[in-house]
Picture (cartoon, rainbow, N blue to C red):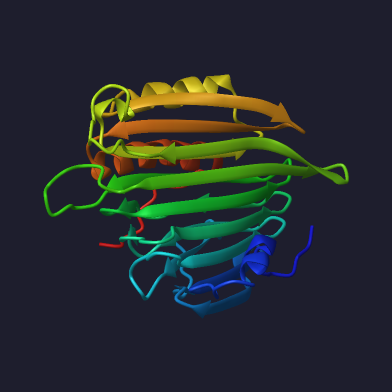
Length: 296
């Protein structure tokens, strides 16, 4: 696996057109049980804040910042994250990702992630808020090793509309492509596609998100994922005011992917649900306390 931080290859190809609004590269390494940034790069409207450590585990926490505050039509943001062998990264955002009107073209975020042997990434951004007439695409390409651990959670929220109507955004496409690198080759482990395209007549009943307005998603990739864990997360989610399903993917090179989807009418309720599931994994697998990012 290449260890030099770089922007995603797809982003390089796209740069023949309009320049990206923001680029960010972050490479995390481990030394003496403590993770740190071995390389950082940013350009345009993306930054990371100073690293901090939430506990004594050695896990480093970085916060991504978009000083511009929002994504607009034809905006392109490129992120490249590598977590080296044995390193441990918690990556979050300073605030919600806001998608405003995108006349003429969609806003797009492309993220490439590579995890080394025995590495771990918790990716827990604040919610994506899509406002009226917004169109957004988010493509995340992830490469893991059989001993890597990945937990990523996301919430999608409809933004305020002047007429008070729900689902005034045009389209949201979120694609997670996860590959396993082992035995000298790379194979596709999971392809998680999410398309939300509200009907033009603003019908929000059965047939479109079952009448719910907010959507939460969690992806877990780890050798410790199994049916018993999927069942436990489903039981845990049942205690929240949300409609939730959990699916388990195939096992490849000893590692398995799990996807949880949840529908609700509240960002806070989905954050509580996904946080509860993530905290269960933090405590069981790493003996860490519940996550408290202390942002607000």
